[in-house]
Length: 128
Image 1: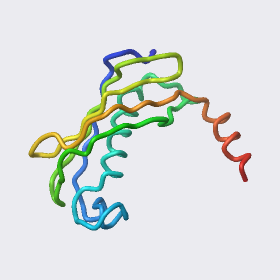
Image 2 (image 1 turned 180 degrees about the vertical axis):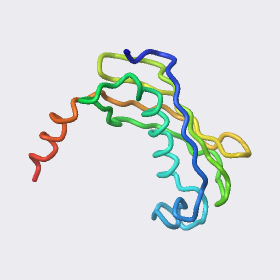
Image 3 (image 1 turned 120 degrees about the vertical axis):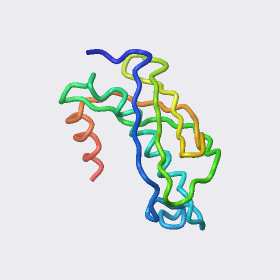
Image 4 (image 1 turned 45 degrees about the vertical axis):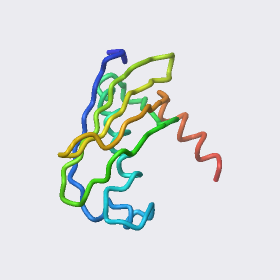
């Protein structure tokens, strides 16, 4: 299977204290942290293309431009949706959005590169 425009992924979670800006160090409030929303968006992008990736390949995030639009308190469900909007060789571009039970909380563009797992790890570990 190949990665094509229109592929979609969704991931969901409940906001817990550990997911707040205060706990992850990205702010001082007990509201859903932007870094957690980013991880959720990246997870949705991975979900969108998961079935099209062979065992020796994976994707790595290379770019993310987002707006965090609304704060979410502990206790609400949040989810992210990703849709492939472009494929250029090994680079995949996604439209990403995040929501809580009251509406949209974030939106943006995310890019992931398809890579060979072993080659990537070998190169990364040459830094040691």
